Amino acid sequence: MDMTGEERIAAPREAVWAALNDPEILKACIPGCQSLTMKSPTELEAVVKIKIGPVSATFTGEVTLSNLNPPESYTISGEGKGGIAGFAKGGADVSLREDGADTILAYDVKAQIGGKLAQLGSRLIDSTSKKLAAQFFADFGQRLNAGASA
Image 1 (tube, one colour):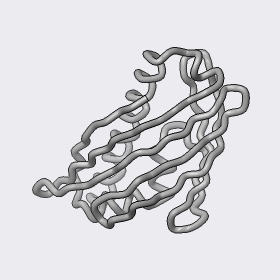
Image 2 (cartoon, helix red, strand yellow):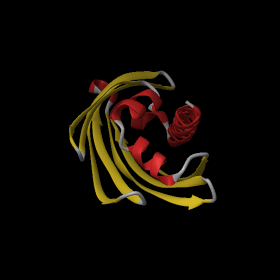
Image 3 (spheres, helix red, strand yellow):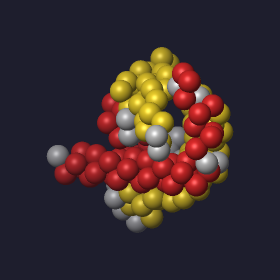
């Protein structure tokens, strides 16, 4: 599965960069995230519970940040295991560019899934992925706007 897109975030690039590297903000914004622990400045451990169609699973996994170029870009990659539901692994190249007072966050995601999840069909996987991404960016933008007005 591949997914690319851009989101306009009403915050300066430095604030968006800081939020993308803040485990508390990410935990609050990632749909179904039950825990997100920073093991090092570039390694995180996550537990995420999601439901895709009839399959509900709790994934545990590791996330790594690489190609760090603050406050412009990084690559985030990871792998999660969801028991009999299967696995998910992949990564995203994330870049930030200033546009006036706002920031444009561009992403290019490549992911693979296996197990029961892979049997659901690409249409369901793609639509659910887009819905989860939209929810993340909506929550992320609200969180940044709330922080800016506080």
